[in-house]
Image (cartoon, rainbow, N blue to C red; front, side, top):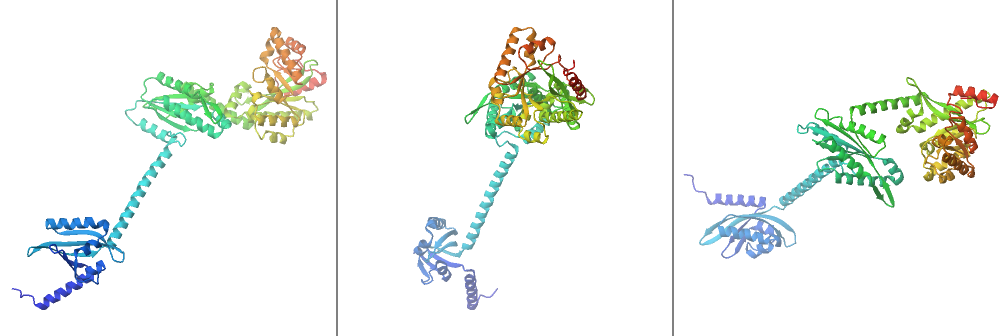
Length: 588
């Protein structure tokens, strides 16, 4: 058997144990639950800041030192261990005499001795651990909050990337993705797209500003959502265009009914500030089965393009024939662009004569297209294309420059050239750089006249148009009103613009040989013009009888096939030379 430990060995063990406790700063305590006396070693007193007290203390010292917020829980932990004769463990804060707060952890074993319940335990300072743990929890909470914020931000970014900021509708990006998903979905047998385009939206932005345009778009979105079935997918795919997706629709007629309802619903007024804005819409429809869904939107766009071309506010359905027609139109449009670049558009001239003397007093310049394959084309075949392309201004400028070059060439050959009237579109007349461009052409005063070619609502002419008209007059360029009497120009308009001449519409001139009412109407127009000191040109003079009647009615100038047919520059030069010798216009 191993020999019993000596007293010295026990002393050495106790000494080492004391050193270990002292080094670990662990305090040892003993609590007699019967007498409620507590024995603290020196380290315990150090922990509680009570070094001046004796080793034995009353339990109240501990109770009063525990932080008030932790006291109830700490006492409950001790009472539970006492009641169950179990190991005691707890953690709490204490308040030192100097007010400092520390965190302690306490553990003790319970045992019975001589009928007494005694706890012997240890305590140590865990303030650093608590602070570290709290900081870890704080950083974890911050990281979690950042992760939540990042996730929310990501969702917002994804939503913004897929939706229109103004209307909240899906945008073109999401529309394309959704259309692709549907085309791969085996349950989708049929797809259809309604391509909705607002009519004259640019004019809304020009007149009511972008704020007014935004109101129109938001109002259109509300109306669309109100009338479309909930199962449809609606997106804003461009500035003034929307697309509506239908899956497994029943009949094409049902789509047409919905489309017509859309047109009717969007043909409404929108109030913005003090303005009332009238809007409308056109709709193109395209349908496809599972085998051909990728071209739905381009096909619906073709149908929409046709709806707008045919007058707006209507519904058109895509077909192979329509696709071929649009392709042909686009081909001609490309040819038109090349024709402008290559100088294929040339002026023809129709003589205008004095109603009394029959001497040539003017030439109306008419555009012709010398097409490399189709020959000479009349304006009816290319002016609509120019209008659709927004190229009327360029066409006007090209014809004007060619006419001025012809005039200079004729003058060099000793020919007296009468005033040349050149058609000008409303867009060209409203163009701010127009006057500067004309000044660079060095136009001789009183040799040129501008005919207002397009339908310009003179009663509401913009200040820019009226300013350009005044500048033209200052340059010695006359202004004439074309097609007077067709309903586009009024007396108020004449007073505002103050043209040099007005040209009576041929539809009023043609019946003058058979209708007394037309004669009285022509005479009234002449009387109004004379009162305003405006010369009157009668176009559409088809016979000599027309010429005689119109002269008697007071028209100053005559123009028409009975006077002369439109002629090329070379032919007109020959006619001018001949008339210069005879003093009269040669027969047509």
